[in-house]
Amino acid sequence: MLLVAGAFVLLGAGAFVLLGAAPCFGQDTAKSPSKEAIGKLFDDWNAALQTGKPAEVVKQYAEDAVLLPTVSNKVRRNHAEIKDYFEHFLEYKPVGKINDANIRVYGDLAINSGVYSFTLTKGDKQKEVRARYTFVYRKTGDRWLIVEHHSSAMPEQPKAVNDKK
Image (cartoon, rainbow, N blue to C red; front, side):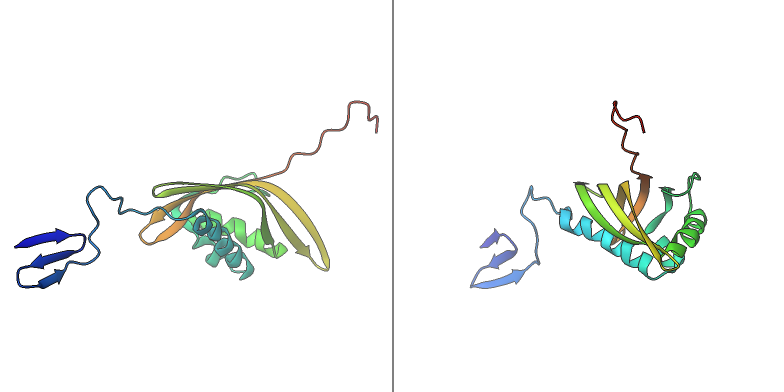
């Protein structure tokens, strides 16, 4: 007698064979990561910034990634150009934090967008800068890499209509 029940095959006389964690038919085997796991990718990127090494930051980006940076007008389309940007940005010892995140997962793509802020240090002076951001990640092998990163400074607050200053 052969009876298949989940991950076991029962053979007559009480013998059985474990086939492993074989899924039942219709079960989705490609589990999407949690929103928390995607949110942690920012922490990994921010930790790479803290090393002060542009090469460590670049490791967070896919080979064909596009960076639309906050403090440069130049679109960065490859690792060499992304590294060039971070060679200059890291001079300010940036420390980032997420103020408002919106995370969505679509299979092997994930998007984290919202508002973040950076504490920038030059000499003994610190400044906080808020910006809007979008990170688009793609699962590559066993890693999630940035394929698109857009960051733009928050627009200035408009003056009140009656404000003559």
